[in-house]
Length: 404
Image (cartoon, rainbow, N blue to C red; front, side):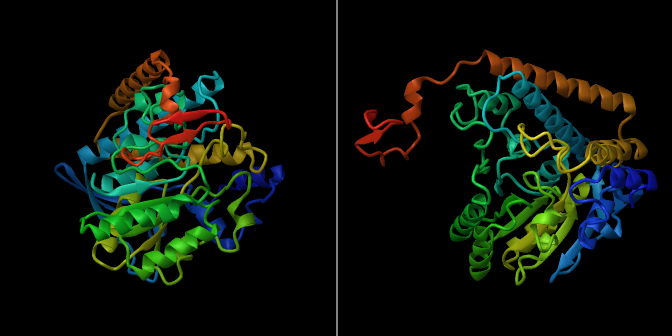
């Protein structure tokens, strides 16, 4: 539970929805985020046998996720490196935006790194991911370089979408974006899963959306079709407790997003612990590939920044609340404690890794800044698949006509 001091500070500040005013389900999630890392470990060589806490998972119409899991030194270090890389990447994007090197929309995932890192650790490169506009971390884990991601945000020709997509439209191998329309990627994810099933692939899709998009009608339409055809898709709600300036408790009649599939089973996962995320995603992957059809997942997490760069993030919650989450439930800090307690890495070794990754991200920024902007003729490329182009395409104005 929140400390009495933190609770008192939050109550005095009187946010739009205070902790005490939250529905019990939301209040429970909030409290469980504070100490959000597995306890009890048994080491055998380079393998660690760990036990999660009872409230790290919850289930709806399916067997619970096992509380015991194994991990290795390599996996623990890889998860640490991935989360640190995402954190530094987002920090670099934040600074570049404030320096006006990045324009337009920009949504950062600082604080949510465990979701992308843990998910990638549970799947194969043949599996697919599609998400909304808070997508930079997923693009990185799917194989895009930091240089390509930052260059895309800066509108450079070396960007992952050749500088034509920007922050919300980044793609990669079996990574279908980066999508700007709220909730629109959810049925697209079902479509990717339909293709996987149609072609007989041993692969599945994670179709992610935020708690702010969870009330969109197309989400429930996708649920229906996915279950009707038993598609290999996991619908993942990244519940960071706030939509665009609104607490989830004020926008949703039910904040138990993992139960919203009704006839579709669901699981809730502690999204602040990379190992818990991996365990949940492994469960979801096995479920969908066993022919049982779709599953709904809820990743309970928290974003430190605002909804986007134009949102200070403090008009609907207090600074004390944000600091409390940073201090008590940061996914990277908790993982570092685990690495040190397990004897995997010393504090000095972790600092060396952080320094190495920071240097890589700094170089990526320099390379992106040095790249050229795309040629104007690129405005008309890749609108249609090759061979399907019309004779002409109109530009921004009626008198602008491009002939293919």
